[in-house]
Length: 404
Image (cartoon, rainbow, N blue to C red; front, side):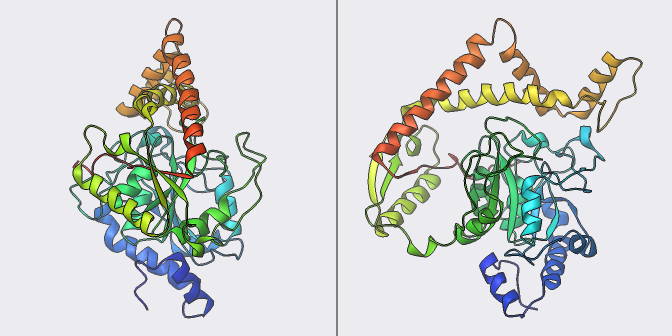
């Protein structure tokens, strides 16, 4: 069989169309790659058996025979879903999320569950209750997070695509750390129905691939309006691959955010890489326009407060009563306390406590409401920038992948 380890979706589609490969052969190849390399990398919490993968394929479509890995906070009917947390250990999803339903309709084989930071809270995939995922290019370093398992599986050539989720960098940052493409789409473009919530006003499903075409191919199958998601935006299904061959339109106004590139603490290697990318964009016909977005100085603090507040609210449902792990106790109050203490890891507990603090009486105005006002100012600042430019360029992270 051909070496398919780093074959793109586009290449695999060609091989399958010419009958040089069967869908089962591709699935078997990917499963063997996991068996060979994932004991060290630990990108997946579970890899399904080949017969089981085929059994859950219900349709034929553009992704038939193109396996992908799914972050463990996206529900797949009759499959385990733990969010990499002890509090959901052994939990089996009772329905498909909208993205999984659409992937099945497109014929995509779903090969397993990706490791992640617990409840998507972390930037290194070190807070998982089960294992630490390693960066495939240097196993002494983290892959980023919270969707580190998804990023590693794609970067290591175990699958051609994977799904993650992002609240504040959880797709883009691990993609950057692992040297692949990470797409965090417009909020509401991809349905969140059936995805475990962290920060509901920020969460979005994202895509890991090794090329722009592949990212567009997966996005084309899962994007679009969903009546089950109140935040879903009313857009029709689009084939995002159709315009890619055109390249950059001559005269495209590319806004380079200088205060992001020249921020304190930026690693020179990252700065050099970003500047090289800017030169390539200019060669391709883009018009570079240097701009500044001072409001970015407040973005981390704003995200910190809003995300923790929403996490405290969303994670209140995990109480040991309805599903997941349940601690032994003598009364209801003790059941809540013990189940949540034993089930949640220290990072999740810390974020819940901070969230409850910034929402509490006497503090909500000083923190949560003020953060919401700053968020509106950030949005207005970006809207103003897009009157001057068509796209923005800035680094994903100030430094390369850090060590464990």
